Image 1 (cartoon, rainbow, N blue to C red):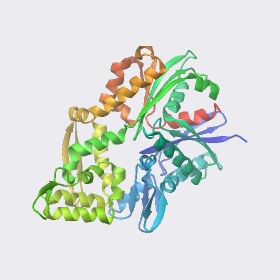
Image 2: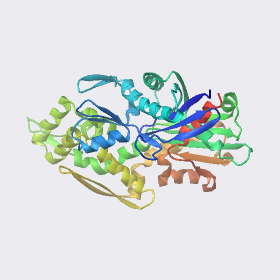
Image 3: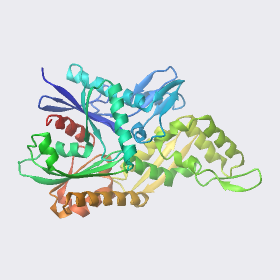
Image 4: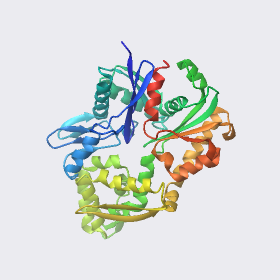
Length: 423
C-alpha cells in the first residue's frame, strides 16, 4: 500500500494542503465549498444553535447572521505564543486554544482524506522560523500546535520551517541540476521568514537537505501587521482614537489607549465582548467629546463586525499593489467608514515594518556567510510579497532579474509534502 502523508501549511489567515503519496505530490483544493479554491480560511464560527463551521462555510454563515450573532474567530494562530491565552468560553462551553485550532486542522484532515481515499494520520506541519522572539513562548507555540494536531487525529507529526518548504517547492521547477544559491522569503499573515540554501533538483535525502541549509531567519511582521497599521492610521478615529472624556472631578482625559488599539488586531475583537470592557465603553461614552466614535466601537464589538471591517482594509491593501490610490469603504446600517489612502501613505505607514524585514534579510545573509551578490535566485511567496515597497526592497538588494515569484498560497504546502519524500 502506498504511504500517504500530508503537508499542511496552517496559516494565520489561510491554510493550504498537499498530499505526498509515494513520490507523487499534489496540492489539494480545500476551500470546503463546491469550488476550485485551493486554500481554506483559518476561521471558525459558532452559531447560536451551537453548530461549528470552519473556513468559507464559517464566513458564509457569519455573514448570513449579519455578524450580530454567534462567535466568529480568526487569526487563532497568532495566539499560539501568548501564554496568557489559555481558554475561552463559547455559549457556556470551555475551549482551550488547542481545541479551537484542532477544529480547523480536523476539517483540513477530513478533506485531505477524501482526496487520499482513506485515513491519513501522518503530517508535516509548517511553522514559522519565529512564532515569538521570546524563546520560551516560541517553544510553547510549537507545543500547542503539536497538541492541536494530535487532538485533530494526527499521530505522526513532524515540523518543518515554512521558508525551507517553499525552497523545496522551487527545486521541482529548476531546469538543470546545476547548484543555485537561493534566498527564500515567505510572507505570511503573522510572520516573514527567510532561508538561504544551496539547492539542486535532486536533494535526495533529509541529511542532504540539512547540509545545504546555510541559515534561516524570521521576523514577527506579516500581512496582518500591515492591516493593523492601516486600521490605526486610517480607521481607528472612527472607533475611539483621540477621544477624550470628563471625569467626575471635571478633569479631561484621553480614553484608555488600549481600547482603540485592541481593535487594530482583528483576532482580538471577538474577545472584547466581555461585560467589563463593554461597561467601560458605556461609562466613557456618557461624558466623551465624541460619543459617536465610542458608539461605533461598541457596535463593532457587540455585532462582531471585525472580520467584515478588516476585509475592507484588505481589499484596499491589495488594490494598492496595482494602483496609486485606493479607498477603505465599509458601511452597514449603523456604521460608515470612508477613507482614501494613497500608495505613498501606505508605504509611510508600514515603513518601520519594511525596515525590520530588511534587517532580518541582512542578518540571515550574514549568518549564511554570503552577500547579496552571491545569491543566484530570490524566491518570494505569500500575499505581502506583492506589496510594492516590499518587492522593491528585494529588487534593490538583489536585482530584479533574480526575483522568482512562487505560488503565493500553495507553494509552502507543496514543499512540506515534498519534504516528506526526503525522509
